Length: 113
Image (tube, rainbow, N blue to C red; front, side, top):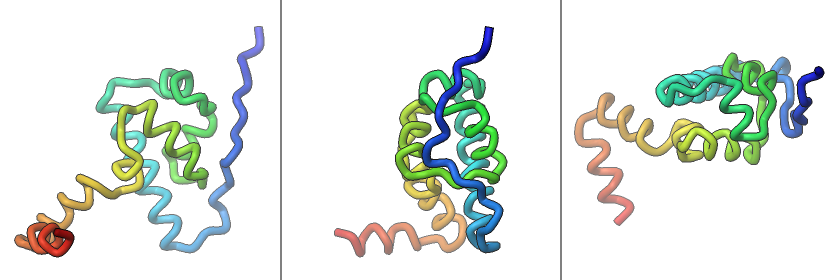
């Protein structure tokens, strides 16, 4: 019995990206993998709940895939995470600001009020 094939629409190979883009893609993949593992979810389970193939997820987690924003949204929703968390924003950005310069987060939040 053949496994059901899921489309990889939105997946592009990340072979021709800049060093900065590569760093972003690797960090993105690491965040997806870390969130998935913290949730105790296998790639197979994430694939089933997101509608994204296991092959794509493996490429995404290794920094080899360059996903569309729509596919990242599907992955984030299946993980119960926000898109900003997956992209490295939200709480992750707050933690970096607090670690780098005490007071920076408060100043940033005050400037948005």
